[in-house]
Image (cartoon, rainbow, N blue to C red; front, side):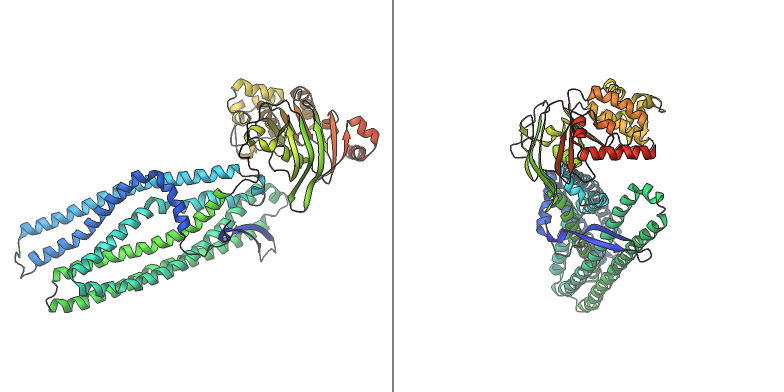
Amino acid sequence: MSESVKQTVQTDEDEQTGRRFVYQDDELLDKGFDWVQVKRLGQYLKPYSKQILPVIITMMIVGALTKLLNPLLIAYAIDNVLRESAPRHGDTALLFQCVAGMLSLYFIQWAANNYRIRFTNKVGQKVIYDLRHDLFKNIQSLSFRFFDKRPAGSILVRITNYVNSLQDLFTNGVVNLMIDCVQLLGIIFILLFYNVKLGTAIIVTVPIMFMVSTKLRVLIRRAWQVVQTKQSRINAHLNECIQGIKVTQAFTQEKENMAFFDQMNLDNHKSWQRASTLNQAFNPIIEVTGAIGYCILFWFGAYLIQQEEITIGLLVAFATYIGHFWEPINRLGQMYSQMLIAMASSERIFEFIDEKPNVAEAANAKELPKVKGDIELSKVEFEYEPGRKALKGIDLSVKAGESIALVGHTGSGKSTIINLLCRFYDITSGSITIDGHDIRDVTVSSLRSQVGIVLQDTFIFSGTIRDNIRFGRLDATDEEVEFAAKAVRAHDFIINLPLGYDTEVQERGNVLSMGQRQLISFARALLADPRVLILDEATASIDTETELKIQEALKTLLAGRTSFIIAHRLSTIRGADKIIVLDHGVMMEQGTHEELLAHRGIYHGLIQAQYRFLREVG
């Protein structure tokens, strides 16, 4: 990863509340023009090169001709018609022809610019589409470790803000750069061609203007980078606040949260004000530099007229060319700044596009055939962070169709085993096989398509109830969706909703109770018809009456499937074929409910503690 975009952990503290927030953010990029980034961005234009190159060439020719010929027509009209000593003074026909020619050139220029803007916008949007598509596609393929270290808001900023910052570059920047370069060279050629002395005198101001423009643009770029970083932090914080709004309100922390947000908002406002002030200072400085050029023109030009080296018409033409001359200089300065901002954004974007999943498929990975469900964990070890083992030498043999309950205190490694089985993470050492196939030798999609999982914190997407259930298998029919819902006892509450299965639910399904959302996730997993079914505290949010119904459904639904159950409720685990007791990543006990109770070990202690708790709350 590039040093300029490596992640850095920063801590902010609100002066009013003393509240401290630790989050990751991007370092400000402070580097020059990067041709590597230009080349990579150019690869996204390559598929459209056959369409865009003819337009660029045409626009350069048309733009140069319309810009360069008009001042010459003005000079011709002044020197040959308008001056009293002109050879054709008062010739209205010739004057009309000159005016008609100028109007024609202006019309051609307008039509060409209109076409260019429409065309380049269309191509530019296609490029932005391709770039955002590649970015989101790669983000979806990344492993859990990637998301563990980054707030959702920070990732969102890359997909939206940073990609949007490249929009002007692709829609107008590239073509304008080519047109401005040709126009600038054309003006310099004409100035020197018609009068070397006056042309050279005017061009002397170019280095001054370029240095001022470049220096100020660097300051402006850095200022807007600060703004971009502040906005990224606000987005990350907002996402966190919205996701945790219930916790905030439950603990009445709205005032403190508002104070901290106000501080972040104020920091962003101050940085924007500074960037805006620098940006507004740019044009006046450029205008002053341009005024110097005009002073040189009229002072030295008047002298050359007296010496009869140039005509009044040519002086007016030169003045017009100077106006056209500063425009591309100014735009080139803006373009340089825009390119530097694009470099900063593209480097952050390509950092994510280049990110490789920690769980990577082998080069010769094969599709996992339909399995029976025999699972073997051999000497499995895993650590989330180097030196901190979450699992220590787990050996477990599961026959197809068996139900395995994983129990233990929080942090004992129950969910870790599930995560490894689904290859959300890769084991540190050892092996995990399904029907003799090492899960690292098969494709991730073919593995996960045969493993269904129901989590305690289930996620409900925006859409209908039917669509949420169908998410388990997109080609399922309405009848199959309803059959799955009936199997998990979700059908009764669904048909009582205003539109039944077509009832719209918003993000995270907030209009549904926790138990109802859990039932929908059950139906979703079962519709996928997996060979291995995982229930990770799946009944924790369901009331006792609903759980009794589900227990009856599970007897049928788990039949013939290998299943892993993580639960604390005795009713959920006592019927398992095998119960595994974990403690700090070590498998301490295994056996049936009766065997472990007779052993009077850790499991016996957990059950006794649960009985005491139920008596106390009962």
